[in-house]
Length: 434
Image (cartoon, rainbow, N blue to C red; front, top):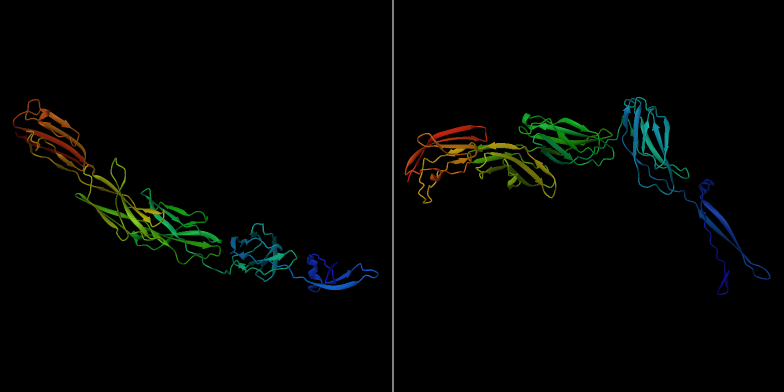
């Protein structure tokens, strides 16, 4: 007891913890009578007070989200639901129920939150013909039942199509196959990927090519292609457990490179690659020559799908070209097929030279262009071999002659090959003038 302005006040504190049994009293209000007595002499004083406690039922967790059922056979159904957030303070368990085709109900399982949220019902007889439905409801620690989840049934399904799947790239691989890479599905009820294919050369429509049932399997290598002859286009769709497939789909096509060779010029053409969300950054034209590293011969930008190479290396007559498309602000690229273009060999042979050391025509040097192998033999008028070389750029001067003459005529025999496999022989004479 404490005194305040001659008034006596009693202070007391306590804590009340309700039990589930308090919900069964027939009323939601608990009344407590408090009696306070002091120690005054000669006679103590008493005071009564009433405390009312309103008991509120503990909350029940929301129901989980049911996924579509999956038939595992004539008499077996796989039932799944999405694990909700962390359970509430008063959560106890879930109850899995089955509604049979004759409208009777069966309790299949009691599932705690930490249990696997998958149940295989092996007593779902003729589930593909008879509409059997499943639902789950939560129960709290006082046995109070929450709302039931929407039904998931074997025949009548609530179908919501999944989202489209984005294709990261379609690229030629190893110059003979096509590699497809796509975005991993975010669907919680994922069932499969379906890859549809179209061959533009044959004017066909999209047809189902492959199915992938693993959500992590996001690549495909198509070996049933001719990358040098046709453009191959692909659509990717996903199916959920309800059997729903996204109606709209991203598509992507391979790059087909074609080229023509004319004297000292190569022209390239390819189909545009315009399937990326971020748009095309550029096309790189990659050129490879024998015994040399590949180089980027040029770059060209959007809507430019042709190029002319007029800066050919006359030392080689064999060229390989590949187109590499790259996406803006991305690591993804798409390669075309690699083509081979060949320049026919050419040879210009002067018919005279003047080794008088005036730095004008002092040597005799045939000019091979796009020549692969080369063999030169030079004979004097008596048929004696006076000079021989396999070096395309090794000139002949009168220094090679033991007895330089003022004027003379020589016979040459030149055999050379081209990168196209052809072999050529030239025989004629050259005059030395002084």
